[in-house]
Amino acid sequence: MQDDLERVLFDEPTIHRRLDEIAAQISKDYQDKDLTVIAVLNGSLMFMADLLRRIPLPLKLDCLSVASYHGKPQTTGEVIFKQIAPPDVKDRHVLIPDDILDSGHTLAAIREKLQTAQPRSIRVCVLLSKKKQRAREVDADYLGFKIEDEFVVGYGLDYDERYRNLPWIGVLRKELITSK
Ligand code: IMP
Ligand code: MG
Image 1: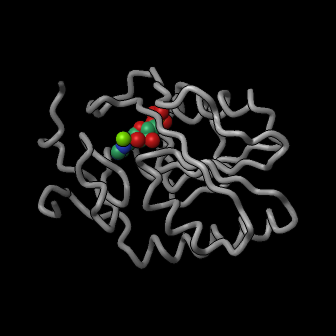
Image 2 (image 1 turned 180 degrees about the horizontal axis):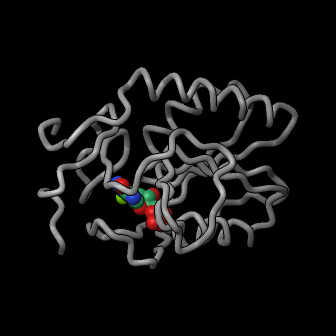
């Protein structure tokens, strides 16, 4: 898997140090609040697991499963929810951790979907944000790292469902990205 990377962007210690900082901020911001974390599968799996173990609050955890890529490196803009009913978050403070903010379609759609369940607040926490013009404007309330507009894999991020188990984040070699 490692040979498929053009270069490593963030190694394990770097990711973990940043998670310490974000988790400390989240723990402070939500210390007296009823927090529900709604993770976005599958990409946020590693990020969420490592982040939540650093937050010593009595939070609730639920997941949303969405697909927006269908094995292509470019988003189609169509976001498919794999469950019919949104999680029960009425009157709760919701935090959504996701892997990466790219076009903004996914997080904008998730935000809209969760809003219909009448939460008290919604905040978004992304590990990575690409520096680019987005199709839909989404503000990350908590952000790990800003990156250039390149295709990255590892630490939960996939290309065609592969590389999620790489412990670090790197840029995938361009010749491995096929236009399907
Ligand atoms: P958006 O809807 O375009 O913001 O994209 C959101 C989803 O696309 C993310 O949750 C990822 O699953 C996927 N994605 C976007 N950019 C990348 C990337 O560079 N590597 C891997 N997955 C990506
Ligand atoms: Mg993906």
